[in-house]
Image (cartoon, rainbow, N blue to C red; front, side, top):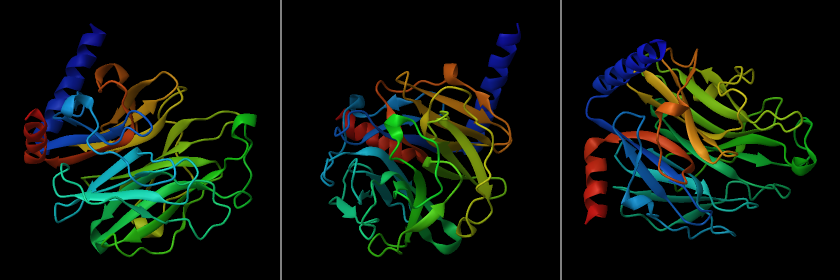
Length: 317
């Protein structure tokens, strides 16, 4: 009886969220194989995600030493243009970039040399995009390790060289970029930052992964700010994902409900938590979400329904 009540309650919340969202649909960008390329899935409720193009790649990687397309992050600008960044190599100082008016036809891919000025930089992982409307600026942020640069954290033997922090560059046109700078510097190794804006008051919530390995954390934490240019507090929340090892948080508002999807990479499946109070409290909903087979770290974002309709029509034909 209790389980049935909870199921009905969650269903009511989903319906309310769909009603509030209006004529929106939702897309999830992700990867499967290391160099397989971009994949997309769509949803109308934030719970059931269906692969587009039979879960086949929509775009192959062309840049980077390793020709990867991991962790694709897509953001729609105010003019309707979609911009995408991704991890292009395991040990490189660049990230990949391309744009598209419809997520079907893509620009030439290019490398953004975000960390070439740092001789000892080891990596540029999981870049994310966020558009800040007040100053019409795109923020790109990613995880980088620079040996000896930041406060020491205890690591396992397997991860002894890694001590990540989040760095950032900004742009208005994806042609010129501000010099990369330190964006988030907590007292733990941090990767996989993702930002979402609350519909109710415009507060920014950033979800990050605590990557510490000794003792292992491997969980997601939350911090928040009113102004991205003022930065995020390095005092973060308790883990929102329990004891399971996760990565690649993808936050998404569906109406007033906040979902954070994540890659449970040790068990090769995807899960999620939800919040109805702007991320103050969380409920695990792993058994209520479905995703395409093989989905790995990506981003979830809202689009007009016509964008999804066009994608489905194009790839069906």
